[in-house]
Image 1 (spheres, rainbow, N blue to C red):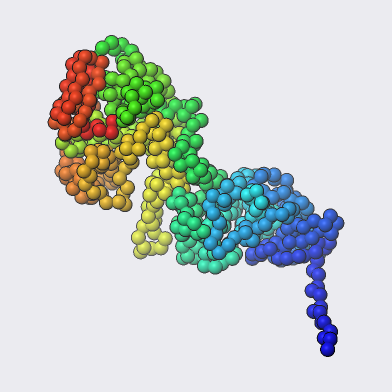
Image 2 (spheres, rainbow, N blue to C red):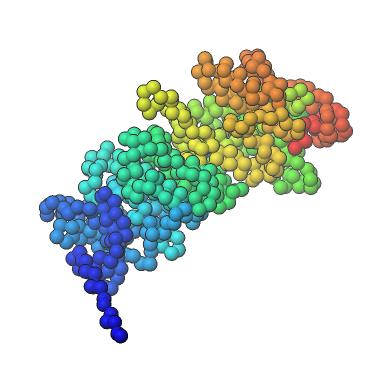
Length: 610
């Protein structure tokens, strides 16, 4: 028996004007995206139109005027517009499909790989920033508005398609608010692209924003992994974009773009990537300017003929910038080659002077830019205050060091632990001001609740620069020629990590410098809070360093000489050291090294990494 085949009736073909509607690509409360076929050229397009038909011809004309204005804005991060038109008061814009897909189509249940995703996101943020600077907000940034090409390029579609959204008014304040809302929406899109499912399964970014503070109570935080682990720096950037505190969020797309770009550079080249932020600036403005009085110190050095290394070191240490420049010059491959293989980096000014000689010190002083270097007038006071605090940290490190350790070495390490802050203050002062603002606690969201906490310095650095401030210092240290042991001593003890007593000299030296820097940071607190801060610091470091609150108070209040202790290098030794000088003697052994002439009195064993 033959059964006649039955066929279901063909689906009705839907059209908008001449366009054949193939498939709905996405929708929000403000717009719709359709995949359409243009029969005139047999080309697939993405057609974007508002959710509601416009009420009259005048409204249609206003929409078309704005859309055509938006279509003239060209940027690699913005999808080119093929056509702006309308049919029966349904206005639309079209973009070429061209083998691309939307982010929604590409997304899986666990998000995308950060290294595959972030370059395209940087491109889109650049386009969004360009549009904002031209006076146009998008008003409906959604995952389906992002067009991904096969080569990894990403472009934002739909600029000008939502002309009558809330916040689309023409006055300056409304435009600014609309642009800030675009940036928040993009942060939520990036969150979804990394995490996979949208927060609370809300597909419409507009609805997600409504449920976030200040209008809602929903907190959006990026998990530590999506399709793979998500780096802490990238998490800090995305979490700032969607922070529950409005004051902490990115205010403009350009700042967001710079942070992502900085993270991307550092991620591609962990050892030297952060340094790319600084290369051009250092070439033009130097690492740091010579401190106030640098020209007088340089003139004094020019007049010197022969003088003890210890006295020359006193002059150099008065200028943090000169200290760093001298350490940079003597740790380079040319100077270090003279020491032979296996020698550690030079971390004291005494040894640096012994290596470079008086002419080397004079040269280091001459290459420094006169104060205040490239600093704008409004930032000079902040740089001066920071340098004063850094010098105080060096003096405190000498005062708080355990007995038997080289006072100059702990002083230099305390200075090096501030290298990142100093460089950022000099080269990126506006960014550092933003970092400090992010670190400040904020008012409670509601009466009766505790203050909102600020970010850690590490998270704030990532959120603004895309890199940790300490990572900048470490990249510079590697460029200078410092080894891993020295780089570790440059790193402060994390505030959220307990302090354990270290048996190795290098660890005790690092902890001493870190303790001194924490005391200096505590000095910025209001007077009633300082004593409690001293007690916390003493509790943290007491077991490792034998530090008490009274020791901290005495170190801060007793007069401290600007120069080094005259006994430097002559304290009891517990390891092996070798003194190097310009005189005739060297000291070697397990006891106290001595020398004659103008050389050092032997390298202290606590300087083992030096």
